[in-house]
Length: 403
Image (tube, rainbow, N blue to C red):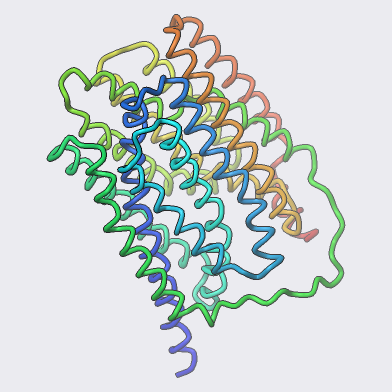
């Protein structure tokens, strides 16, 4: 009876946290499809759009190391969860902004919220999932999260189609944000007291260091990301193409396409990685060449749609198997540090990519120059990746045995 009640409570907590994430995605994932074109509406150049989103992604990834450390040190996991989800309010406030600078600040604040909440939320999720299995728990959570990521862009597309008004659309997002806060408050009341995580005394803490293959792999992923055009610029190019026909409502649907491909390929990529190992990452590295060339080489909407599909394929593999390789190359007792370094490099890659491709689009760089840049970055990245794959075979078993 006690075990049955524990499982029931655990599933309830997982579903509640999933609903919170679902509502969060309705707001910020829905808005991300039109934010690039909105910044352009306020006078931003491609360079500014790329830089703003690159900086946002950098902050969203790099600061997770700091927020996770602070949450562990203070045990204030729910404080970071409430702070992180609370900052999503910056998205509806875009409806009141008429200044490009303020709009960019609001966009960055939402990304800061992502950095604040993610480590603490995942920690709480891992605690309440004991007895169920972390894989199942995170799977249920991700499923609900992805539902929100689909509902959001669809809702925003409908709002833009019916009103063609950025400010009205952003202000409407206050409604799902209020629902988000209500769901989060209810979740805390139901499971908060059960997820107070006490610090564990470290007994016989192991001394060690991250080895060279991990750093080479991180450099390979950094170069791969630097050479991949950001989705924000893909949407920005689509917005420019659609502007004469006043069909901006299509832009969030293109973002939805990227997310749909992303979600569909993630599970397949995960199985492929388990079967073939780290060398399977050569596929997304090679595919990363195509979105950049398609966007920079054409002004046809059909071509941009193809670029969006390729971008979704690469992003789906990034989110499912790039991080899996980190666990193969690092000992378990240094894995938190390893993921912090990896995420920082990943964020730096987004920042550099957004700035460089935004500049190339602003100056109408010739396609051959873009091709050289794209091919060189992905070629070097692939060489580093293959170098790591030669020493990674059997690495996971050895590291876990040592741990």
